Image (cartoon, rainbow, N blue to C red; front, side):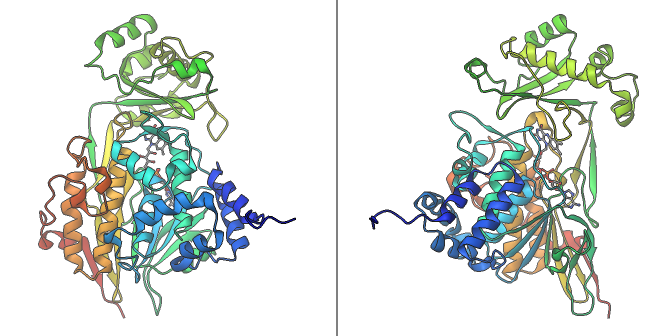
Length: 489
Ligand code: FAD
């Protein structure tokens, strides 16, 4: 009656499948909580969580994923997950870079809490992936969570899919991820309490979390106190992104992607575009992903002529202010550019919807890019030290058409994890800061060509990734102003 060779039906196996396949932040969290309940594992028990999960789930389908995560975790850099057992890390932001650094910190053995103000992952826009990031994500099991991940020669992923993959890996490794909670500032130690965070909602349980490492991955221009931003003002650059519904038909599958038709390489294309449509672009990229995604840099004159921008202003903020933009004209502009550049072969180009239900088209100003002056900082109050770091867009703002956001964002995430490792191992903090800044000097010049091609050997150790890195390029004396101490009573 009962075949002993067949596993008894185990509800946790089905829940695990649902978790792996979940397509929204809410569903990932829901199935994860269910899985923990069914297997009777407390996710707060971060140190033994992953081990218990593997043991109790005992599901053949999960084994290939465990093999990948085990391989990563066994890297010597992590010292069997003991390099940072005394460290408690707060990561601000569950964007791709916040989650990526959280994974590394948990592999180092630290307790990691991630705070994210949003409840949902909604960005359709598509990110370019350098070969090393594809290799890195595959090694974390990306394909198990998202079967279409970088099949064939594909080298991109939508922001939301990437967040979903990294959220799942983070949770499996014992990272605590809270959504719907906004970080509003640091609270200095007082009495017996160490560093904590001021959160909204105020009563959120994570406000009791005391930490000695704070990592901001809040994106864009989010920089916490203590860090300074440099403004890099270039010539006016207006970016437009547009997403169209991908119905995955055979016809759509035939249309070739455009991986970056820079003006200098294909003058005729842009001349024809201008002559036939009045649209004047510097560049355009088209990726076929969950949506048909286009990103382009448009010339101001043609935007004015086509009525997208109503009035000319020299100030980019005024120029692109919502009141000065005709949305309907913007939609036509983006539609016609997409139609022309794909030779009219994408049938029935219909806009995908953004979270607010509007056609997913946006215009951005890339004229003024920001870059943090330094990547790290140490604060000491009442004898309690806090290591602070920036990763991702809030460290260096990327120019989307070049697709450097994830590549440089992940490099900084690894460099930051390496810094936390040194911190955890008790290396004097001025040396920790000096090393981090030495590596940071290289970040903005990195390209796929000048970084190591041995992707399989990439680790959090900067020497495995940068071809020429001098970890003492900056001396401890030069980072003294990146440390503030107040003793207090
Ligand atoms: P983000 O992905 O921006 O993540 C930061 C996270 O921090 C967000 O989830 C945010 O909600 C959260 N956060 C911020 N402040 C707080 C706070 N106080 N408390 C709690 N949480 C907070 N790049 C491209 O290459 N092409 C594109 O087309 C493109 N489109 C984009 C569209 C939008 C609307 C945005 C915001 C970014 C876009 N980018 C694009 C940039 C790309 O998303 C980033 O380079 C990439 O996601 C890595 O960024 P990150 O993890 O550093 O930050």
